[in-house]
Length: 460
Image 1 (cartoon, rainbow, N blue to C red):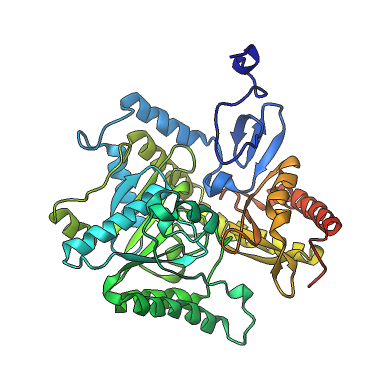
Image 2: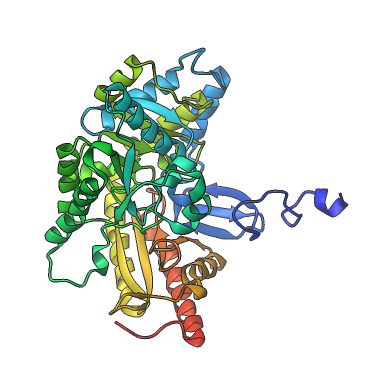
């Protein structure tokens, strides 16, 4: 190994690899909504990482809580000891969860949380004598995680297709992309139209074989902060009840205050049968996630030989200490109210950008879970040709200007472009310009590039 590869510094060759060969600057420190690299360049974290850093960076209250726990015990395996941090956080989550969701199973991340929901649902069916139920219906597009189980219910073709032979593929129904519809239906009726697709799929599959339906109450990376009409949510619950199917809410991204309530289910007064949460639960201070379920489901499983599932770091005391401290900050600083108020104000400012940039086809979201969709023609909502990688390019241009945002494909993984704008719940209107000014400039630069490449017209 050459000296250049071993010396410290951010320019050395990396031994890490993730999705690609691309490199980013080395982080030096972060505080609140801002981050600095080792060259002292400041960035505003307008995506909270991957919609994780809900309370901002380096809050001393969370750091102190983690340090206090470290002085007591850094690890206690769940089969050997209970720990106070995990017990307290479980009680607090049960108090905040909708309806009768009162039993908590800790994990280390979103994929693990979703995987746990699937396994609990299946073992519940076995416990009550309904072994024929194994199909989990989900939506297309959607994203529920990167494990093989979570991928089987994910509707995002580039991530799913390479592993399809290794999985039991699960049925899908269309996501409620009402903003693309060109019909004469009201929003109410559109919501019912998309919800009734679930009933049609249940009947197609055979109701006796369907175990569960899983959905994000507000769409995440795969659909860019997609919010369905209000009528959708109650009708989905009604259909699941009618056919004895478990309703699973994937709140990995929406939970912990992101949409302006602690769980997004609260916006529609829906009580799912099982709920997954992660990301903002410990807000990036340490990996943490949870599955929350009612005793009417957990009890039969435990009585039927126990829950055949688990992770080494489940209920880790440091992680749960961080989770308790993050919840303290959310409560003490009234961040749910700020997410609702600042989110509405930021959404209004993003909507104003549509008047300046014809490539913005839609602005959507709830609370501080917001997105803009980029299109070639706003009238037809025709997506920009995939070869231009428009959303990825916008992210790179913005990054150079000190703005961190998050991109994904909107229409199944191969077409469509959106960027998510989801700053920490601590964001205030006096910080909006640090998002809006570089975003406005980046959109203008991207439009120029696309026009020169013939990838954009002036529809809308």
